[in-house]
Length: 545
Image (cartoon, rainbow, N blue to C red):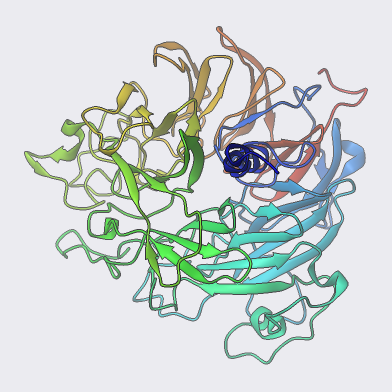
């Protein structure tokens, strides 16, 4: 019989094997690659540069014969914010459906998750998500046609995603190629959209296993701003999902700010097998948030318990105790600690409190934000907290449309409890602007990009700045560390630097469109998604390595 002490260690070992590693083989199966969300890959022999190739005159895509160091290229939508996920021979990318051209469909606006063959780039299946039938005059949700902004999370033969309709779905990784798995069987009606007759489901359509509607379920009833952005975190048998709750987009300078759902939860927990809602946070962040809830959760093992880390729309970072068993009734997540990531003087504006997100918006003539990076004001957390060695690293930022301003990157002691704003700071770094980027850490160095495209290299232990590199190109993505290189997508190019104590630019690959996603690496291939195309990049006998 096994020693009882060994039995107690089994759940911890399973977490280390499944949550802290990059998945089976060298896949990249979720946002951040693994549950700690450190943007680091151990892959080697990766290319330094590539030639994207020229577009075909008929608009069908890129002529692969004109590309170099490119394994294959796939056409996406007109806007792409979903970072690729790679698992079990498939590549998943969320985009919009502006150019679907499916003769079955009349609703052409919304989102789509595309699944490609990892080796050939051939489209295996896609799930179309027509726009949600809501009054756009009342709520500013999906009004910019951003499509699917979530990164898919893949585990075994299921794919978990936050849709562009503010739903959490579990999908069959094989789509409809092997029939309809169920219990959800209304894909034809779902794909057609509200008010339309069901379409005939094809083998190239997605297969929904179960669906949880965060908008419609009265226990959540979230009202997102702009888009539903969070990516799903899996810990054990449970999914942790940010609800993307937000504020009214349309208030004037004289109209009071309206939060349609101030008491909606910000973080929810679902059973991954059934989609049952089992727990919610009880922090009432919606009553304090600036603009929206857009951060994705991460997780890590602290002493004898697993903690889930969440960046709030109020600028606080939270740690919750992960569930170890399913409650019979809807439960409240247990908060272990919270930390205010805004320095005190950031929360004061014009000798008073910052009341809403319009203060400091470059588009507001009353904000006095010259958009030069010097504006001081509070920010929410859009980036994902990164866990490493009992520390959490996270930076504050705003919706990039609001303009530049002072930011703050903090390193938090994850072993403490309670309100640890005064006691939990290991170091902070405020010589950075607002950012939506998640950090990457390796070999004692931390890398992060801010909104105007400056890459900062800091000592992970002390926060001391080693160097700053100016890309002079706005970035909404995160730095990826792999093979001794730093990869970063910007509005102008994929920028590649050498990692280490001195900045060295290796290449800047023009993509022909913005890149607002983050590059990822899986199985020796670099995946780069611009707004319109996905490239699978690897080393050939062509360009230098």
